[in-house]
Image (cartoon, rainbow over all chains, first blue to last red; front, side, top):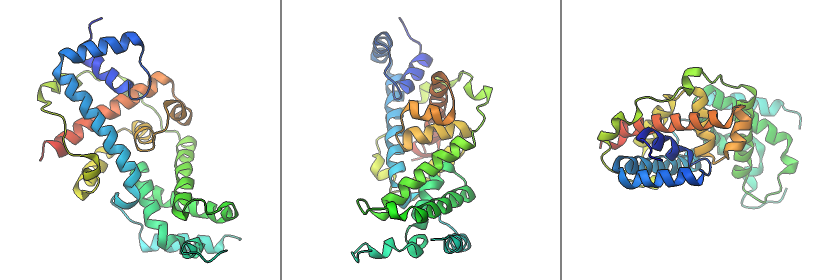
Length: 84
Length: 185
């Protein structure tokens, strides 16, 4: 039943994507109880997940980058050519 | 078309000016390629133009356009499947060798991080360091919250492969954010 840190790290990722088996959840819980590093690791993965969700929602305003004027012009031209 | 406060945005000739950059930024976070992102925006606006009769004003024009763009990105992934290399699925041997250096949980709140321009350049730089297939899987999962099942169909991979890809993407991104952001500060 005992888990090493590598297994725990894998399971900490997987539990973000699917429901782990009862057995897996128990061994992970036991491991986390004893291992401070894996607890920190798990909470950092949570942060990565929450930051990325927020970034996904706010990218329209915040993600660096804009289209060049030339590129915008090409899109406008293509839209004008499009039969309505 | 009714003249509401929203009326200018419904005029397709103004879409590029009013929504172009926002749509571009939405796409470029996800596909990490400026030309491709601009192509996807163009594709989106042309489809929207053809389908404008279907827009009923239940949502804003922006939300409607973003929804179309989201589908265009997923469609692109589906039509241009990125090869998942064998090495991309090999178990990560050394990850927790770094465990000793994990100091504490990260305190900054996600909502304040996304207000910070420098954080964005670190985040996008870290995304650029992921293998293409991993980045696509991660992006659909974490930016857009798609289910594993949906992502598997788009990428055409087994459940186990998907979990390995996501695990490796998270591992690498966590480490990159740690060394370029959280420990820099």
